[in-house]
Image: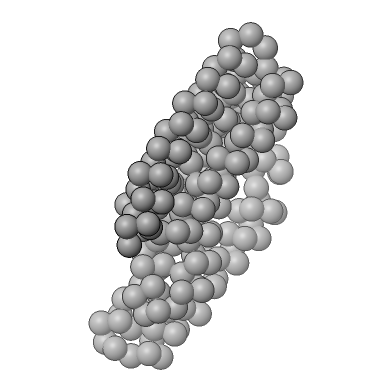
Amino acid sequence: ILIIGRISKRIAIFQAGMTLLCVPLVRISILSFITQNPLLTYQYTGENFIFNAISLAYLAPLLWCRLASLELRGKQFINPAIILDTTLLLCLFSWVSLMVRHAFSGAYLNDSPIGQLELYTYSLAWLTMSIGVLLTGIRTENALLRNVALGIMTLTIGKVFLIDAAALNGLYRVFSFFGLGVSLIGLSYLYNRFVITKTLES
């Protein structure tokens, strides 16, 4: 409907599309994040690692969130576009975290305790995600994505120092700090090379 409104240049149709966007946003906010969150409720998510209920609930909305955000940005509806981008990032973070849990616990996410390898995998997954989000933010010149990437990195740093350092033993602890150090150096280079330098040049 947003696309039809743009093509037909009918503001009423476009506004109807914006109104309909509230339905899936409310559904995701209430069901996916709270009442039907597989980490908080005991429910079957599927045996397949990729094609499962987690991907359907958290990965599928990424495409329509992004497409709708682009449509709204084109019409200068900045605040709704930011809401959509924020929802996209929350879904991405939830999907990555829940998929790590699925890899170790299987179809029911609260069936088994968290082990050392899983604890380390969360840090690795969040570091990788923050790098991907930062690169996307740099490529698209999206300040929100860059700030979120730094936020995820800050969360990961806090986890490594407050949780991993106390819970991990031996090589897991070494790899955790080594991976964090390498990632921080890489992020520092990317941010200085493509964000700060570009800002100074402009």
